[in-house]
Image (cartoon, rainbow over all chains, first blue to last red; front, side, top):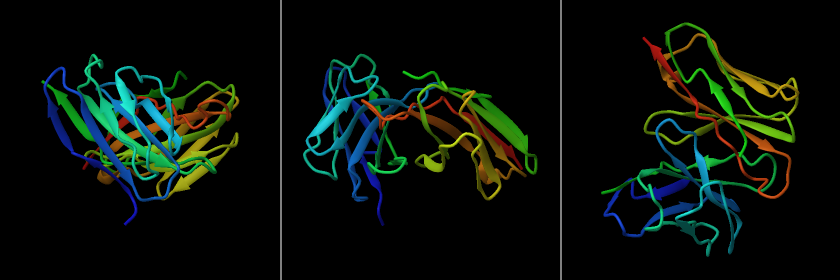
Length: 113
Length: 115
């Protein structure tokens, strides 16, 4: 089955540690995205990538980094510079044609202790 | 960042009731509007992509309309069922340009259907 996988589902880290969230897709989509959700907020875009080896900052990129070395993979690193890292993180992908309907993964809930 | 408003924030309806909610967005540079349904413990799932003023889309008991000139879309659910319980998200997208693939999501309307 084609889809997007994110791992792990729950992640706990100590304050000051970097942590990397995994996102893999087998939909052959060129574009991939990372969103963050906080209680009472809409999904906010952290980073997106339209093609391998290229990515752009979204609305809340500070304290995060990404890489796009393979079409299928778009890992997100939450660095110690991110002031409020505890949140629910969603990864998505889409084609670059048409209206770019986005397909979402199941999400990772990160808790920083 | 686009200002996207969804109302109401949440609502509870009885099974069998029909309901509707609103998404408001800036009408300038409009390109498309996406509606998603997000059930608890699942991934958001695309419902509709709407592009033309006056557009109406339908999927089973769910339909949506679009007014690009005034910047709003309505989502209607006819004869609500418990399985319709979810958060409904709208996300407009502006005309292609730098960052053109970005969707800006509203906070959503959380629907609870009481059996």
